[in-house]
Length: 64
Image (cartoon, rainbow, N blue to C red):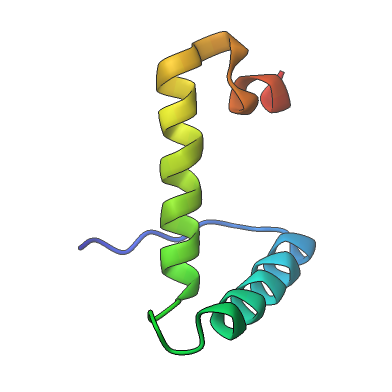
């Protein structure tokens, strides 16, 4: 799998860290939760929504 680097704001990194810790606590070892997994799943959700709804997608609305 190729490695890609993105610039993310400090507040977004803090939110990711907080969510990662909460999800790890919720799953209690049932599933390995990584920050990469969270980001990939979030992108999957957003990009599927954009593919299905185009200009009425949440991504489009946020970027407009």
